Length: 215
Image 1 (tube, rainbow, N blue to C red):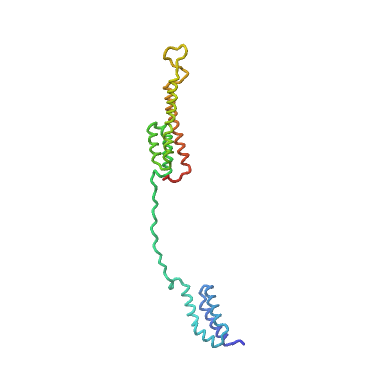
Image 2 (cartoon, helix red, strand yellow; image 1 turned 90 degrees about the vertical axis):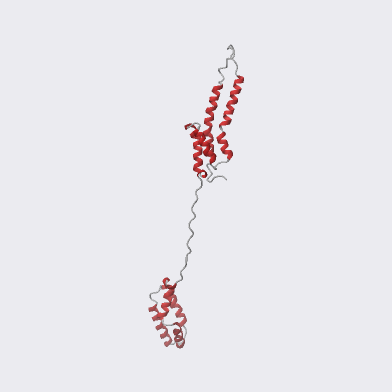
């Protein structure tokens, strides 16, 4: 049999509680009301009075729930440690940049024709200062004209040995079908000039997949 007095006390307390928690967020108010209903269910009139006395006035219950949900009430303050200053990025030396290596190879190949001696010297200085190539790569590109000159010199020397007078020519006459020594040397110089851009292009080709200097 339902205890009407206990039901009346229970409904009266819940009505006052509903009015007190009306301004709370729905989820918090619903959880609070559900919990109190569970505590009051199944009790007789004496048990309801005792439990209501233990719970306290609905306004005080709502105020306690309001304090717990209000972040400005008594929430602990989190102390955030100051962040360490950012570490400045250290720029690599100019000779360790890829654009410096590219510029060195271009000056070596093109500067030779713009300023025949000075351009080559500057190009050699830039190439040897860069660490984007190995030593043997630099040596191949820079010394490439040397074997060409040696080969032409050897051909010139052999040509002078094999050169002989034409039939019917006077003593000491040379064969006009064979190039003279001066022509061979001029050819050697021209070929040496044209092999310098070949070495520079080879350096650029070796540079294509490298993003950091070699150690």
